[in-house]
Image (tube, rainbow, N blue to C red; front, side, top):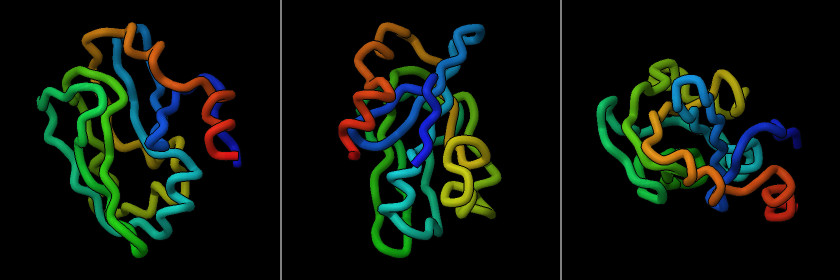
Amino acid sequence: MNYPEKYYYTEEHEWADYDEADSIVTIGITEFAQSELGDIVFLELPDTGEEVDAGDAIGTIEAVKTVADLYSPVSGIVVEVNTALEDSPELINEDPFNEGWILKVQITDSDELTELLSLEDYKGLVD
């Protein structure tokens, strides 16, 4: 499986891509997670403007096999939700690191990123 090197990861199999210029973290689930879930058929996500804390359940992902919670890897305010997933949740299965991004959070404390897993640590978790 391929994993972008510059991303941060969580033990719950989410990825976080930090854009330092505007303090926005784009969040999705990893290729490993989507393969374990199977065909994703529905997502329940927070509204834009909603405040989230790191580790909070912020939504659910419904797949053919199961329903899983989605957790926020960082604290902040939800500034964008990938609305394309409403009609095409399978984008997560097809392209989890690009078209299948789930939401964007403007973070309140970038130090939280240091508590996330590096690519090497995440590979150690899933291998």
